[in-house]
Image 1 (cartoon, rainbow, N blue to C red):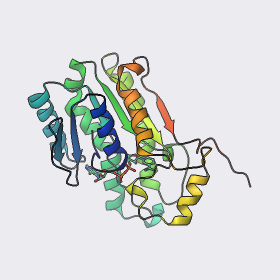
Image 2: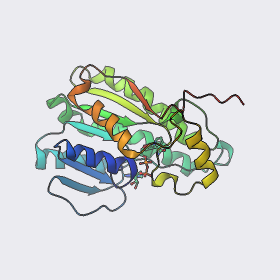
Image 3: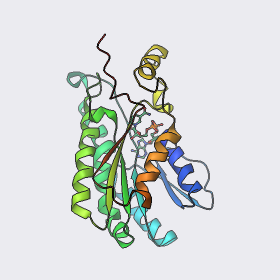
Image 4: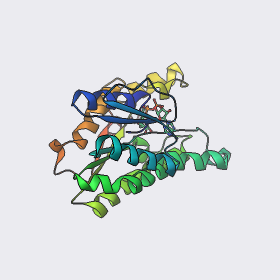
Length: 231
Ligand SMILES: NC(=O)c1ccc[n+]([C@@H]2O[C@H](COP(=O)([O-])OP(=O)(O)OC[C@H]3O[C@@H](n4cnc5c(N)ncnc54)[C@H](O)[C@@H]3O)[C@@H](O)[C@H]2O)c1
């Protein structure tokens, strides 16, 4: 699982552990010391070498890989005409290309045990929100990529995508109080989501409970995309 050091990723690690899984926790940022059932890898998911390391560790330490959760993400806010090309490239690399690299490196292992892939997209895949052109393009790409991979690698491997709405994580740290309040108020649930609420959806898609679900998108947004405030 990637992006494991923070927010939704950290909640998924805890939930997977509670389900009795052993976890390879990958993040570009340093992480807490290994617990016996957690193997922490510090690495950049946009680098194919990181994924080769993950696959090697999964085989050497666990002898298997049942679930790949591609969740790491970066966002740079700017309109397209003001976005630096490097920022565009980096967001596409981390938010989209990393999933291709991950599947490429881990497919053999996933096929051996009829594994599951879960991708973390976003409601940005469904609606336009100012200042997020590269992020939205990458998250929209993940929806198509998830569907494509499900077709390509079924029946051995299931692939599904979660689309979170506003979930209170460190990703919101730089966002002002008024914008936060507006985002929470724009949901039918009238609040931010919690990382563990996304982790529950990821766990469902990762486990046998969802054995007939593949190529699907699960929106976890408190009704954010359902609400249309016409005022
Ligand atoms: N929080 C939200 O409101 C929200 C909404 C929609 C979608 N999402 C998606 O959910 C996922 C998790 O979001 P979050 O809010 O927990 O984010 P977060 O910023 O709290 O955590 C992201 C983690 O990814 C890691 N990371 C960044 N670049 C990396 C790289 N190149 N290699 C490895 N690790 C890297 C970061 O170090 C960080 O630990 C992301 O894919 C995000 O786009 C979040």
